[in-house]
Length: 138
Image 1 (tube, rainbow, N blue to C red):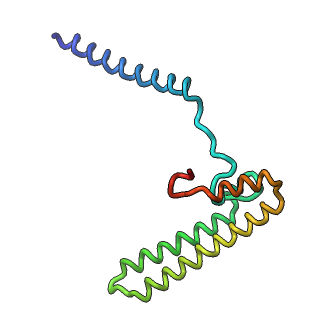
Image 2 (cartoon, rainbow, N blue to C red; image 1 turned 135 degrees about the horizontal axis):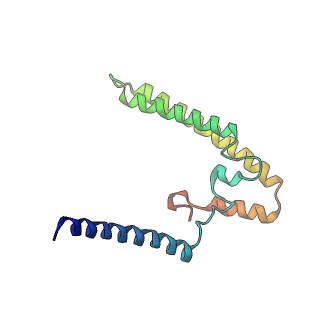
Image 3 (tube, rainbow, N blue to C red; image 1 turned 120 degrees about the vertical axis):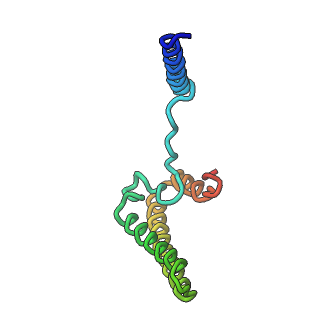
């Protein structure tokens, strides 16, 4: 096999592979359609989307930032030498407080949303609230 034939065979194999890959993507979209959107009753702050509330609201970003900072303080307490159990306990207490503040705000907004919703929407909210986050929301 001369060098030109070898190069052409390699090019043909690569071209065939790329074409099969692209054909697979096109057939996949044809038979499976576009990706489904998340349901409007998604769990957590996402269930508030479309109601002027939700995770993009600056208030939620502030809660997330405070929670992440508290988690960082707890992680730093784990690594601090010499290890101080009291400092780790205090960091965990702060983390519990930040988490509780965020949950309280979420629950307050859910009460407000449920108050202004019709029975069907409240049923959707109840169904979302029952979903298990450990099993992918199913």
